[in-house]
Amino acid sequence: MSQQEIYDFVQVGYGPVGQTMAGLLGKAGYSVAVFERWPTLYGRARAGHIDHEIMRIFQSLGIAERLEEDMFRATKYVFRNAAGETLITFDWDRDGISGWPSDYIMYQPLIEDALDDAVRALPEVSIHQGWEAVALVRHADHVEVEFRSVRLGAEGEKVLGDDVRIVRGRYLIGADGANSFVRGQIGSGQKDFGFRETWLVCDLEPLEPLDFGFDNGQICDPARPHCLFQLGKNHRRFEFALLPGETAAQMESPEVAWELMAPYGVTEKNANLVRQAIYTFQSKLADRWHNGRIFLVGDAAHVMPPFMGQGMCSGVRDAKALAWRLDLALRGIGGTNVLDSYRTERAPHVATLIGMSIEAGRVSCTFDPDTAAARDEAFRRGDVPPPPPFPHIEAGLLGTDAGTDIAGTLAPQGRIAIGETIGRFDDVLGSGWVLLLAPGSDVDIDAHRTAVLEHLGGKVVTLSAPGSGGEVVDIDGYYADYFAEHRVVAILYRPDFYIFAATDELAAIASLVDQIETSLGAVVPAQVAR
Image 1 (tube, one colour):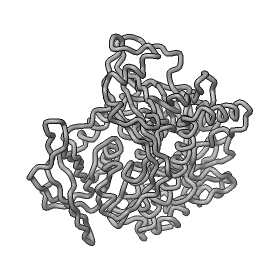
Image 2 (cartoon, helix red, strand yellow):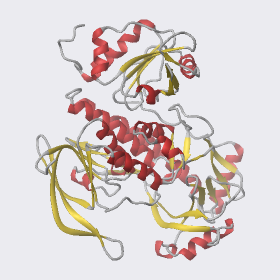
Image 3 (cartoon, one colour):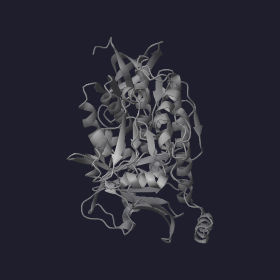
Image 4 (tube, one colour):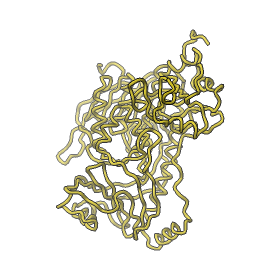
């Protein structure tokens, strides 16, 4: 494609969120030109955690099994005080509803490598590294972006070159991080939630097995709050809070890192220090997530402290939530309300996670011994409520449930069998809009409603019990248990796996599809008869 032609999407930024965004749009068949200011992949671990929902999204890009080879399945994430007493426990020792274990600790460079391979395999996507966005012009039907070349200086710093490219796209995606150029161009401010703490991050490659007796969690010690955890199967991480009065410059030498890790028996003889960095954890949410044809995803739209491990996860959710909406927009389905619902749904969800992350961080980031002692006593007495449940979507593009309240929650993914083919649902039948009927809930869906789903790339799937002779077999009884637990006979879920609507009545199943048309407007051509 020449520079004079218009791409479907121009994207600024190619971190994990940008990679996911480009992959989802490319798989949908759209032309995507990605520009990243760094000449190579970042290659350093920042995020360290993903959950089952993110694994399902990575599954849709064909990389989940590859990622699982190095990821560490964590079963607990624990907050302890200086005496070793447990204050908070996050139980991760279960399977998530998305068809994967609930939580993993991972090494981000391997995530980026796998995503990069998947994206580069898509002929619709072109990757341009070493280009920084410096200006943009908005037109009625496209956005024009000016990029300048970038090279690395002698100290590894970024230096702007003289080469210039002008690129046009029907839509522009800003996946360009916390200091987003794109966010500034759409005039979005940021709500600051007020949390700001600076920590030293030390990533290790062990030279021999390291056993600390406590592998994943926070040490809420007022003398110096810190944490440690696995980073995939082959790396470890320590993080240490900077004490009041300490500066980043004081913490930059490797000698400081080794000194802080010495109480755990970590030395240059049993580990390589592969990364040492100072991070200031912040909590901000963009006021605007889109303006006309320009959209923000990931850190460009929000940043949060790392204490819930949901920063990158939230960005990947953004990408999935936005990709299917943009697909509808380019196909002329849904109107502006569909694109407007992107922020309506995502911003409250992210704001809740920011709040949860701040509260968890406040437990850890306590430097006063008396305050820490009072905190510990409150936990001992049971005066501190448990962490709230993980949030689901409560506003936006959702239908109305009949006899249930599970709209906005994640849809299940179990194993199914069709003939000799056995696997996770998405691998066997794909994703998209799915009207999923419980075993024994077979009903006829008329031609128009079937056409609506098919036009959206969706399908009707009727599950059957093993041995019943049905086509799609719920081989583990997983779906039967889900439908029984929630007392529903059908769920209709979206391409991002969130339930649009559900019902407990056979007679109301077909009307779930009608709610899509209510939300999106006419979906299929008028000549499709009712």
